[in-house]
Amino acid sequence: MTDVTGAPADVLHTLFHSDQGGHEQVVLCQDRASGLKAVIAIHSTALGPALGGTRFYPYATEAEAVADALNLARGMSYKNAMAGLDHGGGKAVIIGDPERDKTEELLLAYGRMVASLGGRYVTACDVGTYVADMDVVARECRWTTGRSPENGGAGDSSVLTAFGVYQGMRASAQALWGDPSLRGRKVGIAGVGKVGHHLVRHLREEGAEVVVTDVRTDAVQRILEQYPAGVTAVADTEALIRVEGLDIYAPCALGGALNDDTVPVLTAKVVCGAANNQLAHPGVEKDLADRGILYAPDYVVNAGGVIQVADELHGFDFDRCKAKAARIFDTTLAIFARAKEDGIPPAAAADRIAEQRMADARASHAAR
Image 1 (cartoon, rainbow, N blue to C red):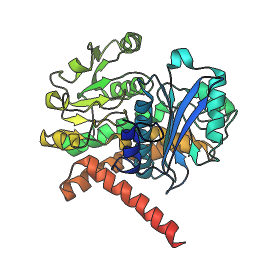
Image 2: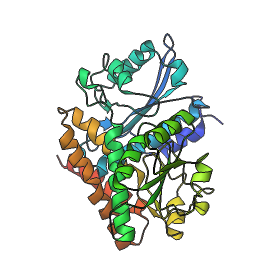
Image 3: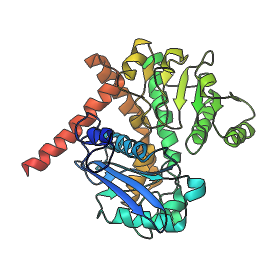
Image 4: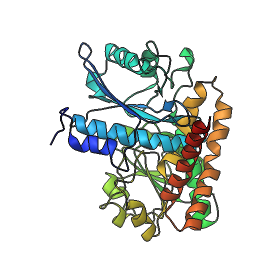
């Protein structure tokens, strides 16, 4: 079913009517010469210019791409609010296989599209895009972060993303077991790519036992070679979530990892990972709570990367960023405390805190 514009009606309903909507602006971008097809979604600019990465992914349909952009942009509003940043939420997706379709011409065309928004949206890396790509985009768009140090940027944001997730794990351990130490804990990581392999390092340095899986066998092999002791691998995520004695499960790949099929069989007592949009649908957070599984909200613990790229706009300082990312420990504990106080799951508590910050900003603007 489509509307009068030919766009799928369910997408427009999401945008204008559902609780997942409320976006300020959605831009459909096309450059036939380069093959660019992209969606830029701006959820909110209440706290400042929308900030969020660019995902390059071979979506099955254009409607799927739009829906992903909407969900990711909304998540960035909450993430930036909880991270204490003066930025709203936005996200872009480029439709295509980055291994096959990514070209310099396409990235330059994309940069021009972002630039046309005049600073309402600031872009960065995400799944399928890298620092070198942002260097190309920046040639056409000054509202680009996640660039290389050689081009005035902060470099790989996955370093502090992993550090923030690690802090979220420590806070979860403090809340559940009364001690932030992860020594001797068994942690399962699904996805050991850009963020996951840094997370393995933090965990092994503290003495945690790590179990990994990834759809790319070369990524797993790299980890096993780097850590010959204390790290094992399983065939897939289905096997990982069923590992006996698992203390923490860390989804670090694509979203939707927590769903009606996975939650009932999870052996872990904590879920804390880097992936965005881990809850497949509303209600999953309650299912986790009913099973006694402590969920550290994804957009809170994975905010280290956005803290880094936001700092790049003001003259990057790694130590300053790492100090801000370390506060994810305290933020996560505060969310657990609010959840207990209000009798709600941690995901709902985080949403309430973020929504209040955005509402206060809108009220301040209206009063001027």
